[in-house]
Length: 128
Image (tube, rainbow, N blue to C red; front, side):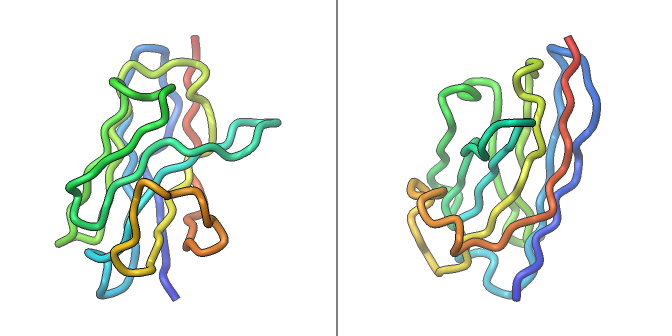
């Protein structure tokens, strides 16, 4: 069983920045594709960003491209999401997901959510 824990959410104003962190347990973290998703009130969960096991490939939803950055520190079993120039429409609960199937393609993150280990979520609220 893999435990996924997010942190770093909060209440900010439009234009501010936040950095989310996510740690995933297990000795094989460096083989996991990792992703961030979010769910706003009344809306379905949506893909935000993903990073390959090697960190060589990153992917972003169009709505966050140029504002959000994802990276990982495999030595610390941690993936980060830097969110800049936040907008009110970024308000949501942000979830981290670990695809523990070794060396899967992070570009497909979101296709098989039932295969992932999920964190409990962290609230991000952006006021206008």
